[in-house]
Image (cartoon, rainbow, N blue to C red; front, side, top):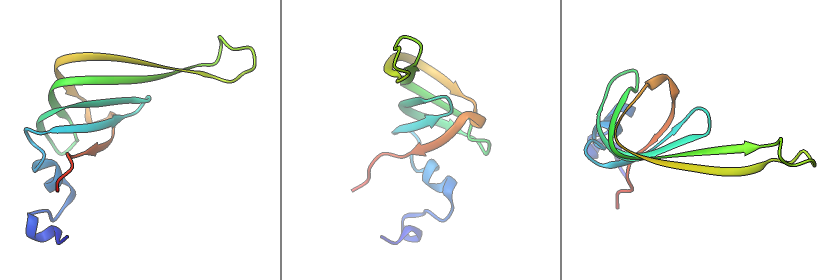
Length: 96
């Protein structure tokens, strides 16, 4: 696939093409978001709507063997501002 023919020449071009589409965002602290991307800036601050946040929690205190128990907490938000310094990865929707 020739990326230059699709208008993608630098990383932010891929984000620009994902505006108004559902994206996956991985954040620091074992948090993940999926939602519709409305805006972004050069610091990777994001404004998203229809967001589902998934938080992975490893609880090592409740098990005497020292192995952790993985818990998953989810919540939904209508609108969210994501501060860019916590963003690790932004994945655009699959394009076929």
